[in-house]
Image (cartoon, rainbow, N blue to C red; front, top):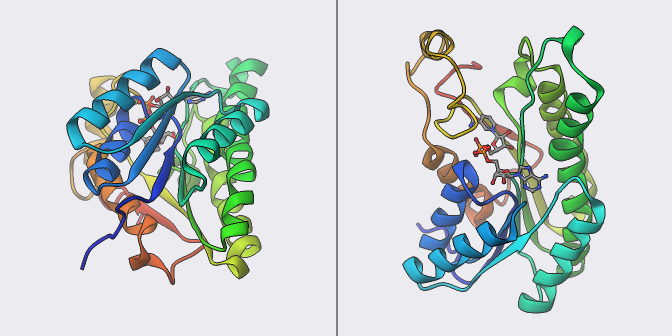
Length: 249
Ligand SMILES: NC(=O)c1ccc[n+]([C@@H]2O[C@H](COP(=O)([O-])OP(=O)(O)OC[C@H]3O[C@@H](n4cnc5c(N)ncnc54)[C@H](O)[C@@H]3O)[C@@H](O)[C@H]2O)c1
């Protein structure tokens, strides 16, 4: 059994580091054509070049600000003009701006919603046009355990990630007739720069609340994404798969 992703055109938003970079490497290792985006063009180009060198695949690095619908449109047009199709879209770009509700400024609220939730909507709206025409496609949205459970100090982030779970189901229903599967992944706590800011106390509390008693690795998320992008998951849609060491069961 294999993922059969050779020459599939895979877009990963926010692929310059962390989970996005692990996704890019995992798909490159499967000989897919990988497009990664980042807020800084230089960084996107650097990652794409390293993927080409290391895996001998075709890669493309593009500058994208997912919270701008125009930027999302430009990215999808650039991909279509180079590869003529998009087989897999992974809406991975995301940010946190944690703050207790009373101290949460308007900008802390809107920037997280705009990046995580609107960014997923804008990129999908532009990419799915081509998937609908092709009558095939796989879309994977990055939610979070916090989207299911909530988190103190994370009203903005948990609202965005819960919204992604609802939007995933709506997309799945709307696109199902054209053979497009839409699923979400809800990681628990994964070792990346995003979680590197947590204090030792918080880290040990999280570990004690996790049945597997450890943080996950970005590769753990990538493994599930490979399955969701492949034909092995053809009868799975509208689902949110937890990759959280058992935290949310
Ligand atoms: N690390 C975790 O424990 C964890 C847990 C649950 C969910 N997640 C989700 O997984 C995804 C990746 O997380 P990570 O830990 O790798 O984070 P990270 O901070 O290490 O990387 C985030 C990526 O998103 C990009 N990005 C940020 N704003 C952007 C924008 N406006 N436009 C385009 N790209 C943008 C960054 O450049 C970066 O490449 C996020 O959606 C995050 O919410 C992470």
